[in-house]
Length: 122
Length: 122
DNA sequence: ATACGAGTTGAAGTGCGCTCCAACTCAAGC
DNA sequence: GCTTGAGTTGGAGCGCACTTCAACTCGTAT
Image (tube, rainbow over all chains, first blue to last red; front, side):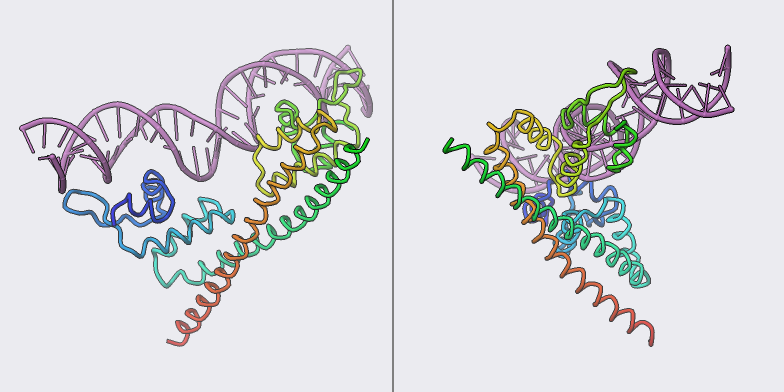
């Protein structure tokens, strides 16, 4: 797969893919005869995963740290599991914040609707 | 209330409070005889609210827009309600992402635990 | 009276996460 | 053989959301 295909398949830009490679978030893929990156299919799953970590608020530095551990193989399994568990806790806290704020939003929206109704027939 | 008290009560820094005032997120409070900001209690609720919007991913520009609408009074009720409804949708999408990723995390953590168990008695 | 802590301002600086640019090479189609 | 489009590099630039700085004024405690 060429870089533009990976970009199309993942929604990341070509620039972002090269940037991720530079910071160690994606392995350097082999090159074709013309020196162009030639990605294997397996990169797609990995990118999907780091995109999810991103979307759920894991910081760049931690994603890089995770990627580095992963590159080191099985000896880092426990460390990676601990990172995932820590991130899971952060996510659970985020869920609570979201739920609380959703309730507040509902209250506010209802309150605003009531006020709007009252304004109408004044 | 003085600025340091508001900072202590809200968890924002003194600098952030002044910054929020500069960009129009917090109303300029009256000053005491020495020219120092003298906040009313009502600012605490407002800061708590914008902090929640912040924590749930609303952008600065949108929070400023909301604050400006609020400052204009009742005529902007509908516009504000629409902003809150839009943000509510964003938050619901975030919840879905979080839930999906939580499930994935659980799977990965369990999988890692299994592998770790196997490694142990090799 | 003096020292100290808390406050003031405008402007510059920071860190994150990309995003764009210049200058280049290469491969494929007409 | 020339154009076009996709790729390459290193480095600069950007937008967001603060954060820090320098230089200053006040009010309170000793």
